[in-house]
Image (cartoon, rainbow, N blue to C red; front, side, top):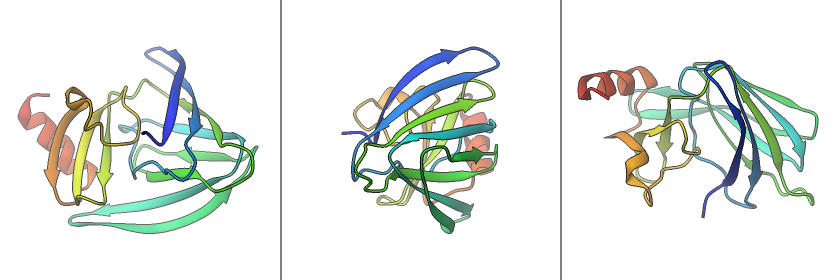
Length: 156
């Protein structure tokens, strides 16, 4: 049901490392990484990687490309990206490293036109089957700073 399965190898205050095995034909939603620095190494398969720019009321596709084994995708604290299996014969498997454990992520629900803040332990999807992982939700596609302000106002 999810775009990928997550296996966290290590999570400390300073580093989070996880492996993702991807579901064919199911890309993750556009998302950020909670203001953390990160990198994704493609281990097997091929990924379709998209970079987005969030603005009030919209999300613009800035760039997209295929990533193959050995490629490293950098994820800065302000980047919004999405990725998924790009149809290679071999299943997509990726290794993710983040400078700190991710406290929460902003995830964009393009179908519903909503912006959702999810717990950092969730994947890059809207966990409708686990509503406790949803920390905040607003209609429209909102930039990260607007969602962080909403979280602070709610005391989360």
